[in-house]
Length: 383
Image (tube, rainbow, N blue to C red; front, side, top):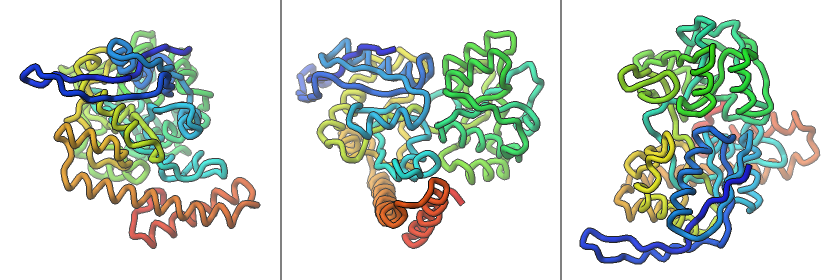
C-alpha cells in the first residue's frame, strides 16, 4: 500500500526571540522512501515523520513497504527512493556480506542521517504458551527466519548465541517476509521471531491466545554478551521499558541497536541530505508522539559511535544542533575509510572473479574481504 505523505520545500524556524531564521530547505516535488512491512515500528515511524512533512511542507512522498533488506535498499541504490528506513541490514550492506556479497551487490556506501533508540528493545519474541523463560530454553523450538533478510536472520542467531545456541540447535522455519513470520507466530507455525518490542505484529501476538515474552539478556552475563557480539557487533545491552508485554514498571534487560535507521547513500548530494536531516531535527516536536519509538529520533538519542558512518549532510545538521564532537568526527572518518577499503577490495576481486559460480564467488569474496581488512588493520566482524 502506498501512503501519500509530504516532504519539505522550505522552512523557517523561530528563534527564542521570535525572529525567523530562514532554513531554505528544498527537495524535489516528489520523493519515495522504503520501510519495513505495514504496521511495523519502522513503517509507523516513517509515516509519523511523513505526516510532519505533510502538515508543514509541500512535496509528495510515497512510503513503500518491503519485506526484506534487499527489497528496501534496491530502490535507494537505483535512485528511485531517497531514503530507506533500515535496520541492521544497513551494516550488512556496508560490509558486503550475506545477500550483499553476491555479484549484483557488494559493499554499499550506505550512510546514516538519523536513527532511533528509544524505550523499546530488539530481540527474539517468544510465544508464552511454549513455556520458555531463558534464551537457552529455545533448544529444539521453532525459530523464524526470513528469506532474503540477512539482518533479521543474523539478529536471531546473535540472540540465540546468548544462550549458547546455534541454528543446529533449533528448528528453523523460513518465511517469505517479516510480516508472514509474525503471522506464523499467531497461527502457531513458529515459536520465536525477531522484532523490536514495539512492532505492531508483536502486539498482535501479545493479544492472541499464545501471548508473548522476551527472554532476558542481562548485561552482567559477560560471556553471553561476548557470544552475541561475535555474531552481531552492532548489538548493545539495553533496558526495555515499553512494548508488547513490557511496561515501565515491569522492564526487561535485553538488547537493542538503532532501528529504524534513515539510510541514504554516500553518493547522494550533501545539500539534499542536510535538508532531510535538518527538517527532522527542527520539526522533532511535530512527530515525536505520533508513533511508538519516534522519540528515539531526538538529536541527543543518536548513537554517535555506531558501526555505520553518518552522511556529510547529516554531519552538517548535527553540528548545527550542537551534537557533534571531534571524537565523533574521528570515529566517522574511520568508518568512511572502512567503506573505501571494502570498495577497493570488491572492485579488484569482482573483476578477477567475474566467471566464478555463485558459491565460489561468495566464498572467495569473504576471503578477499578478510585479507583487505586485515591489511588495513581493521576488524573483520565475520570470522
